[in-house]
Length: 319
Image (cartoon, rainbow, N blue to C red; front, side, top):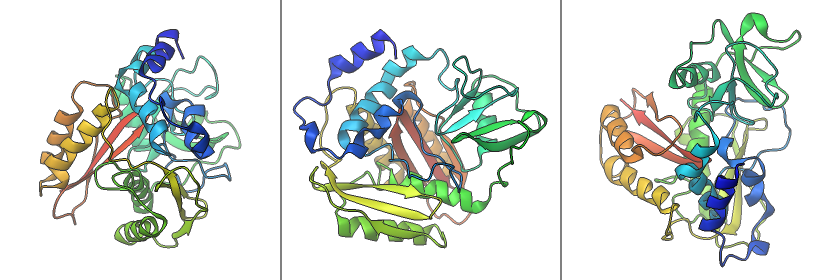
């Protein structure tokens, strides 16, 4: 992080007045991982056995993430989608060590559940050529897309993405969604489990279960996490404050974006094209992860997910 970025965080001081000792330690995982490039992983079997904490653990972590995404992080990166991602996608036109400090790559959060398609999107966003004969592999805990003929010997390509990968990606997005999903209201242990069960059923994901984690003394509201290796949604109750509280400063932009998406998409019945137009207007010119539009021929009305982590990520679905 640069000095201007640290100064921006210090001046905002979103944790003022918050008793941090009462907050579950999982809340700070997104901060330790490096907020500007933090995201969820979309593939079915991550190499790390421990489930990663979601980007929206409690409100404190979210406010810092939204602050960075609102402008401060842009000063730290010459190109928004360049550099790859520790736990998202790293996209290489030519193979070189994805862990190198001078990494020449694009990347960011998973967008659709198909890492190859998503990397080609990041390449396009950065004005770079498409990756030739791309293949996705797991490389020391990160998903990397690179030319098939250049990946290291012994690297096994990941299976081709399926509709189940897309639905798993939507499950994660919905569980973290600020519009009408898992980050949109205060979930208790009981209501959180009910919501997660309904989302698994809605998306037709077989073999997934919901696990209620031990309560903590951080506040009345919980959050969600997923472990794809075991097909488990975890509900963490009593971890933080109500996410629907009013916030001043840069973090208010997240709430303003949420409200615009609610009014223009969730509270209406609009087409996918109309939803994409509403979302693009609401995002405006602030830095954000790519707006993703996914066709769902069975949808009668468009739906939208708003995730926060490093920046904001909006996905619209419909026909």
